[in-house]
Image (cartoon, rainbow, N blue to C red; front, side, top):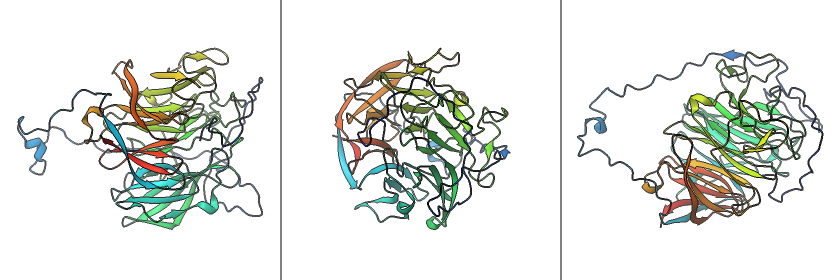
Length: 429
């Protein structure tokens, strides 16, 4: 799932980068016929729409149906203790799939899991349930490809799936949800982008705090960013994209996207300067954006940025690899990682981004960022203060195997997905 998983050889770095022409995003269902490569669409820029945020609840309002607001100080829920990364933990296997890749909670409160080959399964008390969506005939698993991400619309009326089509294009499929039931036959292609190489395709997918859809895309692959995509705003490669999946046909671009008024920039770009952000997440309490970006030869990096400061953020690739120079000068607006470690060092060789723990079963982990490394498997905890300084980072004493994702359930408890097949929940020992 990274350039160092062993799934395919990695081309060597090229010395002279070439610039990729503007890559256009896809729309409308386009059938793959006669072995021909579907075009990237639309041929025109998508519409720009104003997105009105949902009204914030009145925190000062006290109602009879809000028992916590009426509680006295003695009755209030106790404050979580200070984080303790020495807490004893265990991993409990709850399901197996051929190759689990991602998880998200549906409108029914059930955690749904993707299998790399192209299927989506609800997590039941007896393990992974029968597939509710099957895109296997439309998905390739070559190299780092496959069904890699999923997200549910905030209002629960659509399921979004991030996969690679048989021609190697990154694709988002929107599946209808009617009366709480997933309708696999009612779907549309929301997005399609041709990929120049089979690695660094990214593929993670999340609905953000603003109810918009976010997609992480790598720099297009090979090694050393030969397309110079990381700092090229004309291509959506090497960037985090934000779209309104129902604001247009097939989608619209929020008017608040940072480069929407620049004629030569891909308007979908929300943040850029990324090499392979194959796992990112939002803290459900603070809304902070966390991005783990796989390095080239020197640094694996973890980025954290306040949501209100994330639009337009430049994370530096390919001028920088973490805090180290890579090619050219450091951008003036470079946002450095909050934590980095040596590639191929004792911590591993390919960071797997995780989530901030917000469950209740392990109060000692409240506010801790959980992550791992695909080449190592040891689950780790990271504590960063409000100023972006690392307070503590350490191994948590549990090994998740070939960790490709972390998935919180409706209660905030975290599951570790092992590409080898196991889905395990982090529990107190």
